[in-house]
Image 1 (cartoon, rainbow, N blue to C red):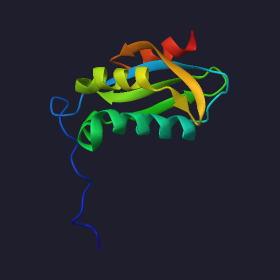
Image 2 (cartoon, rainbow, N blue to C red):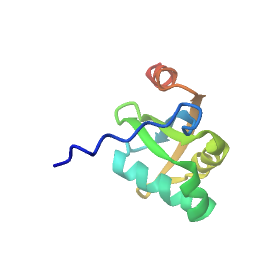
Image 3 (cartoon, rainbow, N blue to C red):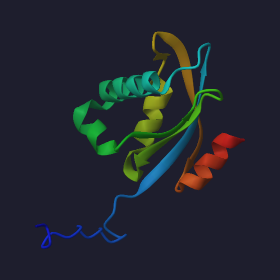
Length: 118
């Protein structure tokens, strides 16, 4: 029935969106859950850049280690500075005071994971 249908072709590497990975740590009295962290990141990102700016950043939380309070955010290469500003201005995560410290900005996920494992 679906013999005529085939998988879509992948975009060539030159046309794909380039990503950067931001390794960060959260300094807070409480260890926030992944859900609380994502909701507060999006809240501050939307307030700072609006819907149009937030949609262009392709913000995505890749990894989150609750015990170490460290994680990795995947972002469009053009929006790295915007997301760093959002992280710097994030002051509360789930009604608890928090500070987000950027450890490293990397072009590969492997190097970002090495930065949060130290």
